[in-house]
Length: 352
Image (tube, rainbow, N blue to C red; front, side, top):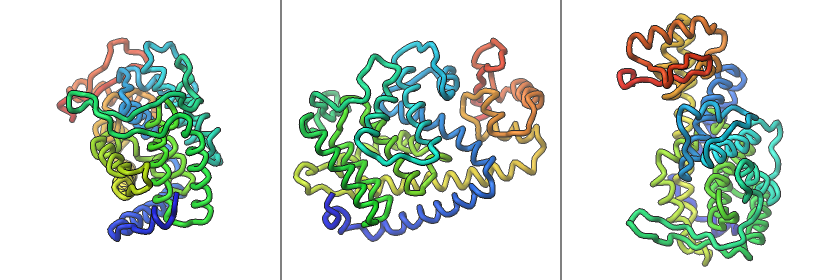
């Protein structure tokens, strides 16, 4: 990471986006002091959205009716397939980051530790650097097209060690805005592609880790991964543009940094809107709060525990009363008919 070449040509427009993120960081700190309970509820919802979205970006999807159960922390269940195992692995990795009272310094062993968590429920493969080539390809045009050729396995370790060291030095010396440093690190990490499988998920975990370490806590309360999934064409296009001539050291980080700054800014906008709307729930009756939450804030498929976590202090009896009423009105429907305490519900087209 050459600071002068990498950051010396920062576009003027980017300054506005970075200033927006700094304002969001300050606002977030106020909310943490004033509304800890509300932020705890947002964090619970965001966690599941992030696990789901980051996994789905790599084609790892699970049955919506199984998602809430698989997302429960520290639970090893009877997995139905490899997708569920990888989903649970991402759960464990993101939970370790989000629950850390003091985030670890990013080192090569720590990166491999996160990778080991990602694949802990599969038949191995986690926690090791790649031992064979892993090309970045696209099949969008009906045939395999190589978009980028990462460094060879024999180069990967030394490049990764160099990247980790360069980031630590740049961060300690504050040579650029923290978001620029995080973005540059992630871009190089993805170019190195140091593990055989899971590079994208690992990069998003490291993005969250480094953002939290730099004081930008928005990934806790508004899913950055969900935004990346929703804009995945722009995500991959920005990476492609910024990795052109990477091997020659003539690439430009700015397409990727622009994308990252815009995505984080939208996450902060959503976070502040969600805080504002949840605060307004306080003026409603308990039944009205449950109804409003289910219609406008709950996941499409939700369970009782989702409502309990979002609306502490409201009894199960009140929640069940509202759910029965909403089912009668055709606004929600059970995903199954077991009627147990963990039964899942979904909003209907009429509600949406």
